[in-house]
Image 1 (tube, rainbow, N blue to C red):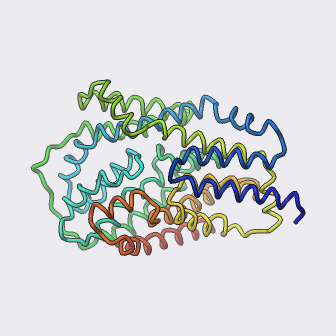
Image 2 (cartoon, one colour):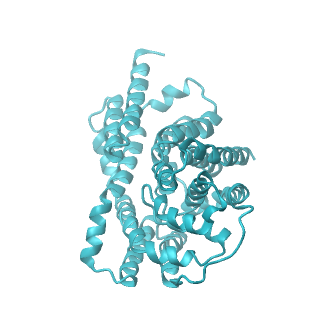
Image 3 (cartoon, rainbow, N blue to C red):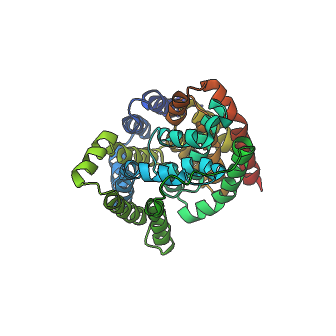
Length: 387
């Protein structure tokens, strides 16, 4: 390896280290600064300008505006969703509760469904089992949820179609649900609590955004515009349904710091556009790394180490494409799944830490409860990629 190649690789490593070290304090700033550091390796003065220009397209702006509205919807619908899901059969409600709140993506948002899981499961499971159950079913739907930030980032970076990606992810979702049932719900007796009120409107409203997004994408209008229209309509309906005044919506937005959701997405895209202009792939390809290392092993390990799916995918997808020219649906499904599996049991995962605190459980005991299902899902995904 010559000096120039070594310098390029060093700057790439420094950019990754910058993300990993500072991401817990401010993710979007960490990723943006990492992109600026990486741009030095191109020896061009317009690298950052080109990346910013591509980042600020109308499509990216639509998606960023959609993502910042989701936490507000989550807060507005928290109470009616909790009451409604509590009426279900215990096994259904224990899985459906975390999954429904997972549709309302908020960092550390598993804490929203923790009281619901506790109410439904009661003393029939240990604290560590309830932690694992809550974490698993909250996040497993992210494999196919079209408004998941991680899935949107993955699709955009991989230059693949959203609907096509979801179709290829679906078998892994089914396997994930089956594994989750076997490990967390089997043996839990049935029964339901009919004393709680059913808020059918809230259940319908929360499904509107992804349905509009997928429909508009299927019609060729675009995933980005579909996401913005769907989420905006859902926000209007949510505030109307809960009779929340505009000034209270603004208060919720400020407390949730919703602008961070938009900035995280935009910074990730910026880093990807910078990476595309570098010679990093050529330098690493000279080392001849195997595909399974980049598609399975490293995503799992990095996801576990940093507790961030978007951050892991931001690093791994451009690197994979740079080395192998393109990414197919099965490879993306495998990389995404292995990243998610590592992330689920990461001690740096906010949802896990907050849920452990809520149930007063043992952190490492909870991680052990998640390990086998996560390892199985990663194994299934790897076999799936090789079919």
